[in-house]
Image (cartoon, rainbow, N blue to C red; front, side):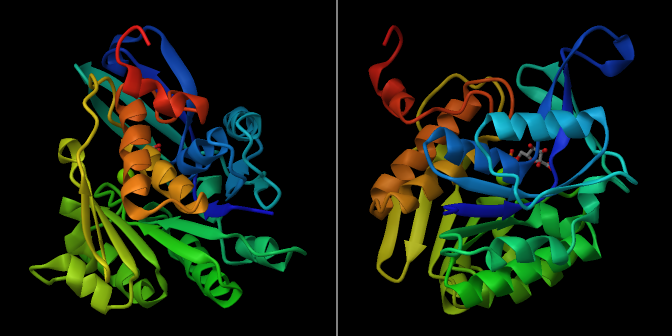
Amino acid sequence: MTDLLTLGETMAAFRTTGPLRLGGTASISVAGSESNVAIGLARLGHRPAWVGVTGADEPGELVRRTLRAEGVDLTWSRVDATAPTGLILFENRVADINRVTYHRAGSAGSRLGPADVTGAFDAPGPPPRLLHVTGITCALGVEPYQAVVEAVRRARAAGSTICLDVNHRDRLWSVAEAAAALRPLLPSIDLVIASDDELAVLTDATDPAPALLSAGVTEVVVKHGAGGATSHSATGTTHRPARTVPVVDTVGAGDAFVAGLLSGWLDGLDVPARLDRAVTTGAFAVASRGDWEGLPDRAELALLDHGPGG
Ligand code: CKP
Ligand code: MG
């Protein structure tokens, strides 16, 4: 049984310690918001599946090998030999500030389409408990957007709980384009996750959370970065502070937060405990280099409670 189904593009990630123009060494890994969430859930003992397309090339093999090694189910992903796997370049500039460059136009990952999502819902057995979609997949083109629309439609029909992370990327599309694509999905979304500055993508209201609840969303979780996170629902508002950790690399922190939140949901935790797990997994990502490498397994969740030296 699949706990969480997600779909998106995962790229080979190159990390340098300075500007690429200076040459030197790079570390190579993989990156993609949706697979970051899938890895985070697998580390915590859940059963995630990732739907995506990779090229028949070494970056694609790296993506597939990494996700398999992390325990992510690739049953419904595929290889497209006619397009390359996308690349993402993180050039570390100062402190935790990276210059991020995508090389993903025309990539295999952007060939994801509605036909790719049917397998997971047509498979025998219960449907995925959760569907997780993000604005990034929607921004990749018409077909990837239609894949999200189809996944949401199928998940709704199957009774899966549906989560949307706005994940706005202004290098991929404008706020107006994102609003036009994401707002029509809202009546089908159970849980919306957004940072403060992403709420304007979903609503023009001056008080966004109540407006989103009125639009049919059951829970709105707003991330305030170092200010923690707040959950809004018909039963009230719950706030949790962030965990204080040294800031090493903030990329992937949002996905780590989502993984913790959804893990708590899968475990049947109440809202405060779900937020506590989310800010904890987010803190692991902030305090470690890489998008997902530092995410905790279940035993490690308590590690931050102990302080230096354990
Ligand atoms: O919102 P986050 O910092 O958690 O997202 C990071 C990911 O998918 C990263 O892995 C990158 O590849 C991306 O977001 C993206 O496409 O920007
Ligand atoms: Mg994010």
